[in-house]
Image (cartoon, rainbow, N blue to C red; front, side):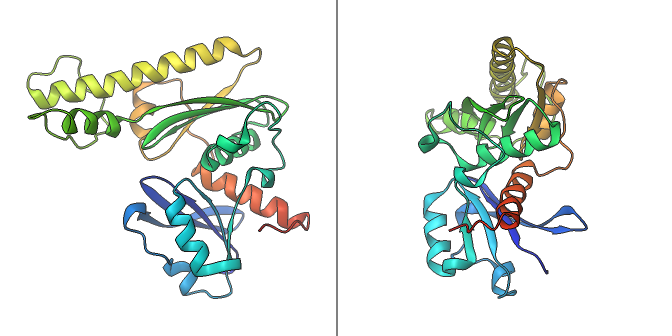
Length: 249
């Protein structure tokens, strides 16, 4: 490993990648809740620095305490291709900002990102690179856990990529139908109303661990190239600042 490490610390998973031949290569995926205060990839390569976005403050505090200046947690200021004048940056998740920067770079113009993870969220960037905002809604697993934790008998279902039929012949199938189709319906409505508000055509990209399901359920969604959209945004911000001689602290 010769170059920096790019890291996306999400609520459920943490991804680590490096650049090889001008492209990202995913190295590792960890369960964020079980992640320790160090990363093997940084421990084994003491000359390497990490650039990260993080939505889990305790994980950030542990890694900052362990690595100090070797670990750079990106802020909205580091995403210099985007204009944040229309939004409250103090409340923005850094994964959403990285997604917007990556989509704007890939589309070379207006884009929407649907990040399908623990939460499903959308971000919108216009043709001038202005971050317009978006929506946040519960992911499929949150809906399933809600039913399981607030009832006496409903089981907790694992996630599957197949779109379920609307009529479940047993309780488990009925839960799958209700939660999974509700997620699709909610996202379809959010996207439909979002597109009605926009004066220009936007590319709509899907990313995140649960993206395969939503790509099957909503054919209008696109797979971004390159993949690993959030990590691509981290890479853009890190290299953009380094090339401009900007110190990331």
